[in-house]
Structure formats: C-alpha cells, structure tokens
Length: 250
Image 1: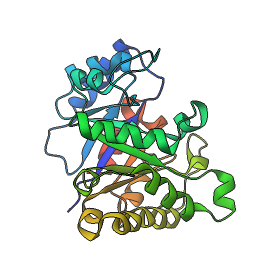
Image 2: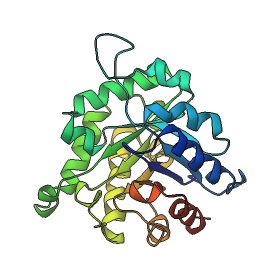
Image 3: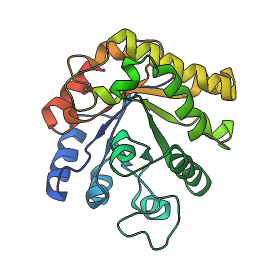
Image 4: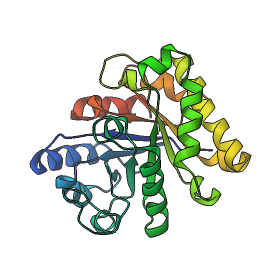
C-alpha cells in the first residue's frame, strides 16, 4: 500500500527565524506514527535550519541544477543540497518552467543527476495550462511531459519517484480541479508509468495532486484511488492551516 506524502511548498517565503518557528511548532504536533508522510520544501536560505529542527518532517529542496559545479550564478548543485540533508527535491515546477525557462530536457537532466549522484527523491511536477485544459489536451500534456522527463531513467529509479500533477490553472488562483478531474488526471499519470515501466513500477509510484489544496478539500482528494498525497502552496505557509491539513489526513 502506498503511504500518502503531503509536502508544503513554501516557494520564496520565510526567513530563517520564521522557518524555525514553523518547523518547531509542527514537530510538536507530530508523533512520528502518522499514516502519512509530511514535509516542507523550503528556500535554500533556510533549508539547513529546517533540517536541524525536523525530526518527523521530511525537508525538500525547491529546485537544483544538473551540474555538480560551474559558472552558474545563483544555482545550487546536488552535492550542495545533499550535504544540507534534504531527502526530496521538487523538479520542474510550473513556475520554474514558465518564469525561468525550464524545459522537459532540463527536467530530465535534473532527475537523472539526482538518481545518479544522491539518495534524494525527485518530486516531479507536471501539468497543463488553462488553454491546454480548455482545448482538451490534458492527457496529451501529461503523457508527453512524463515521457520526456523520464528518458533513460531506469524502472528501479522511477519506482521511487513522487509525481505531482498540478494543473497550472489551479495554482495560486483559488481554483481547484474537481475531484473527478484530479482523479482522472492522476490515473493517466499512473497509466503512463505503466506504459513506460510496467504494472509493478506503476503500483509503487506515488502521485500527488497540487493546485489550491486546502484543509477543506484535501480529504476528498486523498480518498481517490490514484491520489497518494498533495503538493501544497499557500495553505502550507501558516502553522494553523498546516495543522488543519494534518488533522484532515489522519
């Protein structure tokens, strides 16, 4: 049985002081025996603070470069984040794709680098724009992004992946996909993994839904057959709303 994984993505929010206060407060709310994994993807300026104060929470990076070192001003490498102690790393978030020209090719390079050089698990983000959704291209986008992101990634590695389906039109907009849309899309994700790697790998991959997930709706999403967790933005920034998410998923 796949254990749900729920990760808050802080994006460009929180100082070290704020991060420590949040992590300490949430840790006091967890006992380590939860039925789900909970985590935070933090800005690199406060990753070490989060790792140092986390016991039950997993801590993830928000991005990483595909080279170990070099003239890449402002970037961080896999060895750098591995040394900090992160266990997961978000790859290919729509904001990275749209604002910083991430492509399926660079996403693929980053995933391969993580698997080759570390024990850090990629959280691979995929999803369609509003225009693509309205044109009925959701399935095509999901399958294409997965195929391109996983070129030359072996089945054993793929089975460890967390894949976050995030319809871009539902990120930070207050809109959220209906339960039916979310389940159908996550089922397409699992089916494409089955096409690429077979039934066994597809049964192991955890698929998250992301897009205006809140304490009020997360329980319904997680009740779906192919939704194994959530990647959460705004609702992960406040202690009380993150506690409410934990309560809703116990």
